Length: 54
Image (cartoon, rainbow, N blue to C red):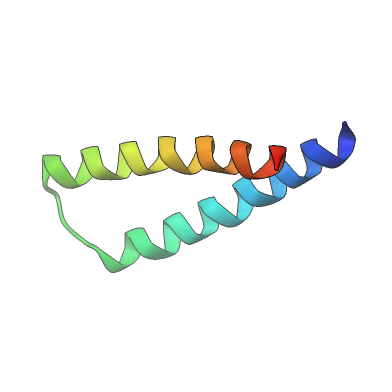
């Protein structure tokens, strides 16, 4: 079980780092952009969980 938890947090950490790197590329103050960032953060968390289960 600890193996899956470590994989989950490692994948989550890498995804968050990539998310912040790519968020600096797309500068703007649009509401649609904020919504896209929110949904992408949710998708990153869910996909990191599914990757850890594989």
